[in-house]
Structures are given as C-alpha cells and as structure tokens.
Image 1: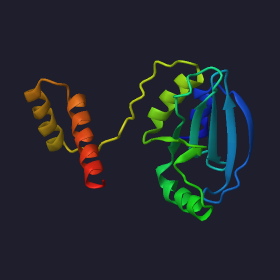
Image 2: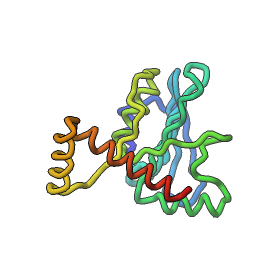
Image 3: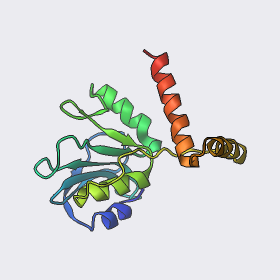
Length: 173
C-alpha cells in the first residue's frame, strides 16, 4: 500500500500530520485524514511513500460505540513494530483504554472497510478477509468437499478456517 492509495481513497482530506517518533519505521511521517464519521491515521515512508501502518476509528458522536477500530500493518515491519512496542512496554494489540485493534491482513480489506466507515456507511462487510495461498490440488479437494456438501467454495474455506480457529482455542485453553 502506498500513500497515493490512501489519498485517493480518502479524497485527499488530510487534516494534520507530524513526524513519527518511534524508530521501527525508517523515514517515517504521520498523516491524519478526517471526515464527519471517522479518523484515519497513516504512517508512511517519506522517501518511498510506502505505508507502514494505517488505522481507522469512528467518531463516537456519529456511530454506535461497538464499532471497533481497524488497523493494517505492513507485514514487512510487523516484527519491528512489535519489538519497539515491547521495549516501550506498550501492548501493541490495544488501540486505547480497553479497546483492541481489529488487525486486517489485506490492504484491500482495510481500504474497503475504512472507506465505508469514513463515509458513514455501516453496511460494510465486517468479516476479515484472510489471504490464502493454495495450490491447484488443494483448491480441487476443497471444491469437491464443497460440492459434496452443496455449499460454495468460499463457505467451505470459511468453515475449514473456523474449525482450525476452534481447534487452536481448544488446544490453548
């Protein structure tokens, strides 16, 4: 994701910015976008325009308070961000107070959700998109399983992921 993507998505409605004071991102600067419905914060590289981190949070005066903030972290810098958060004794999963980030894996998923929130549209898909790298044999096996159950391929993948999540929770309780 690049700064150009954010500027286009949020119609260049930049409301502020400053230097970014953490050291986990080289040549970093912070920008804010604001609408009547939400705030978007972005941290980007001033030389390459590559985005390191971007968040969207609601304006509590215009949304139900149960809409949690979304965040996308550039995968290449997640470890550096986590290490600096640890050094600073900050929980990187917390946005503020007792509110946790909803971390998104896909830049496109973030932009889709953030644009809807930024424009006050609460009908956006709240499910989290998970990128999968499957080979043809795996796709075929899953497609056959879905066919046998008379459900879509997407629904079958969703069920498989949910089973894996449930198993992980069970194993770690």
